[in-house]
Image (cartoon, rainbow, N blue to C red):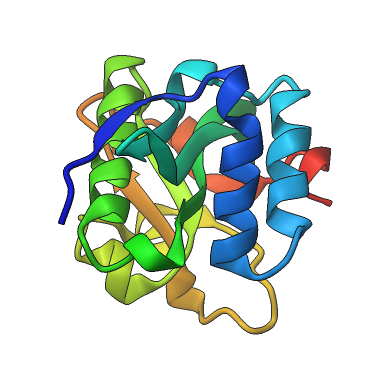
Length: 175
């Protein structure tokens, strides 16, 4: 097993990232979404990370922006999407390392939490919790169980802040 390094993505990585995304998801849709994120207000370049092994991009994760809306208004919060590792490099801890690095970046940026849609088993093992238990509602695809709506609470989280509860809104780039 070769070692890997995690670092922010660079424009020269974009083609390799696309290749990883298409290989991991088996289609172009997610890679197209990442391209749209990079062209939008939700893009956070410092929180778009790659895993590089032997000079090759083998994994990618992004934390971008979304909104949480409630009776008090709307605010921007962080969302992790997508996480991808090349199939030939999966099951080596690269995905978990990418998620941990992205969460550390979100914490350093002062985010209160990070939301995502994903496998409760996988992300739960990384410390994600059911979003509904924290007053956060996410509209999930029909195939996703309610537990797929998850949140990772960061040190800046204040459970008494009503502005952190509500409905997650996805930016138009995800339509």
